Amino acid sequence: MLNTIISFILLPFLIQGQPIIAGNVEPLASREFSLEKRYADAFVNSVFKDNILLTLKYLSGEEIDPGKVDFEKVRKPFEYKFVLKPRETFAFHDDVLPEFQGKVSKTTNAHFNGQEGFRSSGFLVGDGVCHLASLLYWAARDAGLETLAKVDHNFANIPEVSKEYGVSIYAYPGEQYSDQMQNLYITNNRDREIAFEFKYDGRNLKIEVVETL
Image (cartoon, rainbow, N blue to C red):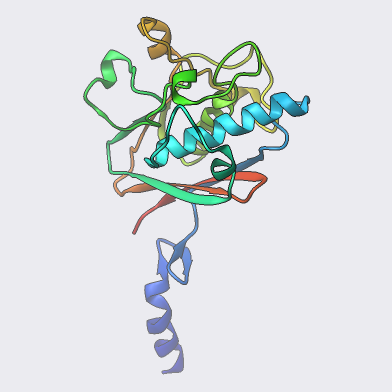
C-alpha cells in the first residue's frame, strides 16, 4: 500500500524516464564558453565580447539606440529565452536561403554593422558574432534539432568550440548570396516546443536547449 502511494505521488514528476524536479526538465543540450577567452589580445577580446552580448540584446528585442549603445548595461548579467514551435525555424539573420523564405519565425534582428552599434577590432565590424552562432549551432546539434550551416569557420579558431561546430556569419547589404550562405538555420523537428535559454553570469555564456512539457 505504501509503495502504491509513493508511486502515485512521484508519477507527475516522471515523464518518459526523465526526472523533473521543481518543474524543471533536464535540458536536451547544454553548452557554454567564457567571454573572457574569445581572443588572446585583451582589447580584441573586449570587442568580441561586446558584439556577442549586443547580438543577444537585439535577439531579445530589447530597445537599443544604435547611435549610442550603453555597453555598461549590455555587459550586465542576464537571462533570456526564445521558443520555437514544431517546424518553426530560427535564422541567425534575415537574409535567408530560398528554401527558408517565409518559414523563419525568429532571427537575432541584427546585421552586425556599425550602424547598429557593433564594434570593430580594426579589421571587421561585428567581430565575435560567429562565436555566438557556433555555440548555438553546437547546442542545437547536440539536441538533435535540424540544423544547416553552409560555411564553416575553419579559417580561424574559435576558443572552447570544436572546429566541426564553427559557423561563419556574414550580413552585408547587396551581398545576398554571401549573406544567405553565411547564415545559421535551426528548425524544431520535434513534436513539442523547444526553448533556447541563454544565461550570462558576467563571465560565461551558457545555452540550454529545453523541450517544453
